[in-house]
Image (cartoon, rainbow, N blue to C red; front, side, top):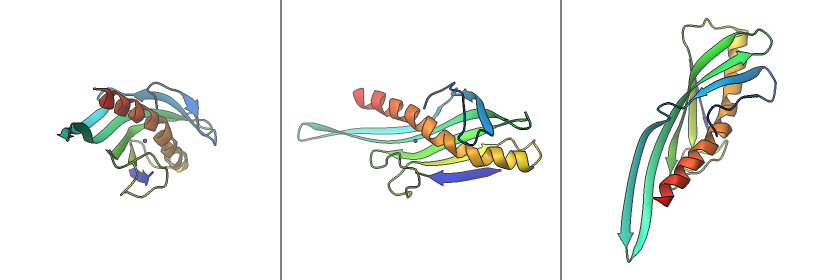
Length: 139
């Protein structure tokens, strides 16, 4: 199952979501950067940087009431020089995200509650994307 949203943290951070039903217990950033396309153009002595990033990581969360654990992936895409982190923004101007869960776990209310809150990873990971962009522009 997957969900998508609009509107890009840090690895290994832990924390409960607003509703307290979900606690992020692991954020794995191995292979965090899925794809990166970069072009540097020089025109009239000035450099211009054009880029497109697609990042993905694994997550694990524990449902506070049941103690059940769910894992999945989180992807931020549409990251370019002409887009920005803007929760709820449109695809033409904002980073976008999608989240997916392990399909081996049977659907249920606790799974739905966890998946509803995975969107909160967007802000967490957006900070990490910001760090990547700063490193990219310094090079």
